[in-house]
Length: 154
Image 1: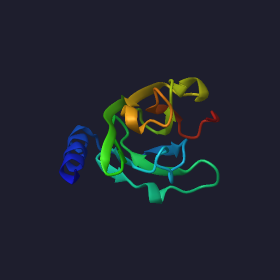
Image 2: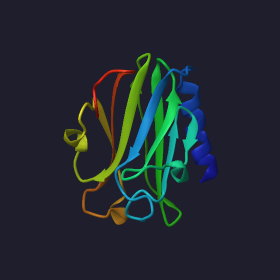
Image 3: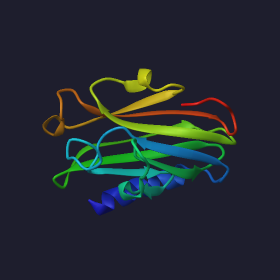
Image 4: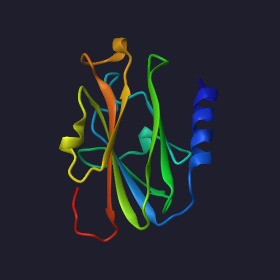
C-alpha cells in the first residue's frame, strides 16, 4: 500500500511546476472522523501529502497551502476503509499567477458544482459499491480561483 501511494505522489511531483505566490484553500465538506465520511482520505497536492489532522477552523475543516504560479496542479487521492482502497484517482487543472484557489472535497451522489459559487471545474472519483454510504456515491472535487486581492467571495 505504501509503495503505491509513494509512486502516485512521485508521479504528481514530476508533473508539478515550481512557484510560491499562489495559494490553495482545501475545504472538507464531509466528516473526517467517520468511515462513511472522509476519515480514510489520503490526498497529495503538487507532490506533497496533505494530512487530515492539519485541518482546522470552525465549521468546515480547512487547510491553506502554497501552490505554483503556473503550469498544472496535480492532485492525487486515495480513500481507505478498513485498510482497503475503496476509491482512487488523479486530476489536475491549469494554474494562473497570483491566484487564490479553493478545492472542495465532497461525498455525493451527483456533481456538487452547482453548490460551489465561482467553481470552474469538478472531478469524480467513484467509491466502491460496498463502501458507499448511499447508492451511487462518489468523491467529488470542485475547484475555482480568483486573483489575489479581488473582492470575489466563494
